[in-house]
Amino acid sequence: PDLLSTRYLTSETEHPHKRDVHFADEGWIETPVLQRGALASGDQLSGPCVIEGVDATVVLAPGSAGTVRDTGDLVISVR
Image (cartoon, rainbow, N blue to C red):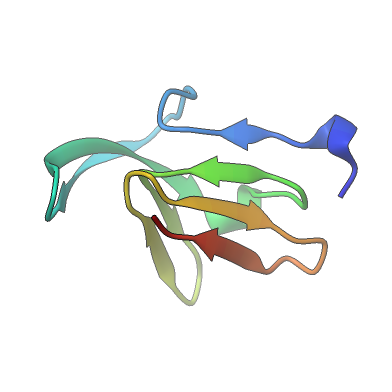
């Protein structure tokens, strides 16, 4: 990915939509909701966040991370 265009999206990043999500170890957390189609190659995500797509919903737990590949695949690392 082009590192100059990499976006780092975290729970502290301003998001227009959030929802309360329950995580077993942390309880209820106000969590950003991202649209899968709005993510670009090289975007790096930091949990907690919810990624909604046409065919699937992905939940990144607190401490997890994700990166969008050039192919559009989302690669997730869990803690």
